[in-house]
Image (cartoon, rainbow, N blue to C red):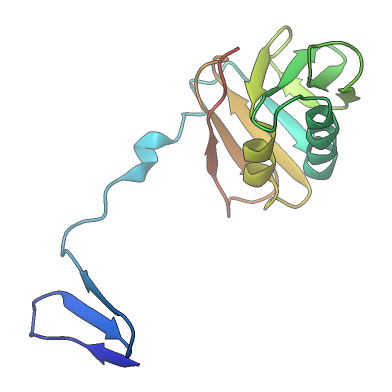
Length: 157
């Protein structure tokens, strides 16, 4: 394995062996401000706090009745909590879970099950999600610390 830096200040580096060579160039510029991609908590219609393991299990159960892996699951909120459902919307594939939520009565949103579980899986304990509309991204953070933040894009129904 060979590592090479051809010129001072050129920003080019190369890795090579007997079979292949890879060249890359670094560009000296400011990293773009990605905070603008994160939805504002202040603009959210409501917030829900889920137990991460319970939500992941409910999403996986709902996804079992979907006829395709990419078919979305739905999360519906009411005054008693949330219902996670898949398939054609019947009682099979639906799970009621306890959720603390504010401002989300009657709110429904849909996600691809694999994407939703991959976004919330790194969170241990409780996960908070801020929702604005069923077609705009949600903000995801752990409830007890600010070490992780993600944007979760819904699927239109």
